[in-house]
Amino acid sequence: MKKKQQDFWLGLAFASPFITGFLFLTVIPFVQSFYFSFTEYDIFTDAKWVGFDNYIRIFQDENFYKALGNTFFMAFIAVPISLLVSLLIALLLNMKVKGIALYRTVYYLPTVIPGVAGSILWLWIFNPEMGILNTVLRYLHLPDPAWLMDPAFTKPSLIIMGLFGSGGGALIYLAALQGIPKDFYEAASIDGANWWHKFYAIILPALSPVTLFQLIMGLIGAFQIFTESVILTGGALGGPDQSLLFYAVYLYNEAFVNLNMGYASALAWILFVIVMLITVVIFKSSLRWVYYGGE
Image (cartoon, rainbow, N blue to C red; front, side, top):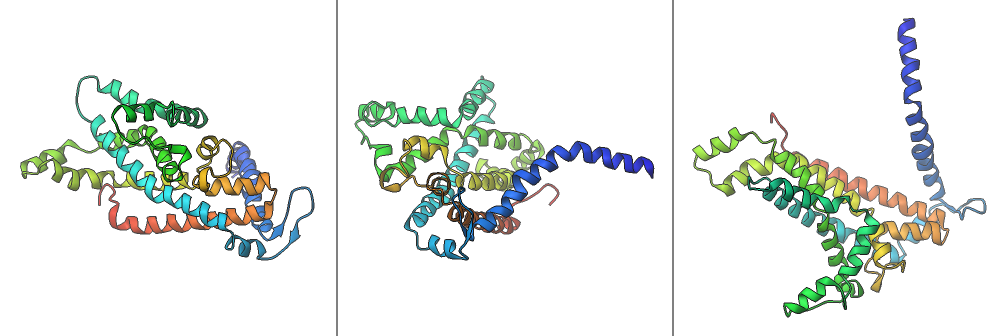
């Protein structure tokens, strides 16, 4: 009995750094933000209770709908495109060709570039006058859009930027592809299955748990887009016609620029509810399209 108590306190001592950090950096701020969402608070003066005023004001705020619409665009358009491209790259990198290790390294390298450095690099690429992208388009006698200066092309530009880092997702798909037993392909070949039949009946179901993981992580990432928007717009809130005003950017601007901490806390709680609802819907729907080993 004494030995068990000693093991318990020893285990607690080793876990205490995590418990302390989780308590003071996650749980307490989480509870405080809920309280502040019902107050008018600017850090320098005491919080003033205002009830549901912040939430009512949010649903009357045009910038809220603009930021939410832009964020939804990236979540429901950009994320599926990114998944599809990652899968296609993984299928190519799974082929047995000479120098495949080099190709895998080249496709993965862009994912190690920090977000700020990558955004600055794409600022040069998207430059309408001197950027390499428009230079190539003009050489091919194709239209050369203003990219980050044209509201119609700002979000497509961001999608192209995101595809630059598809190597990370492709690597996860590649690992899953190599885990599919060869017996499955051999049995399908004996039954006369062609490449499409194998892809539809073997590869897609086998990759469905990985797709679920990447879909949820991609959606969460889409709701947290911040660095790219701030760098590409040069700090101007939302850029041209606020086409790059994303939810996280608007929340940050209200909290740390306008010092509307109460209003920003209410925005954060609405974002939390939206992400939670979307995640629950995806998990519920996954019962129909995700297959695990042994099923």
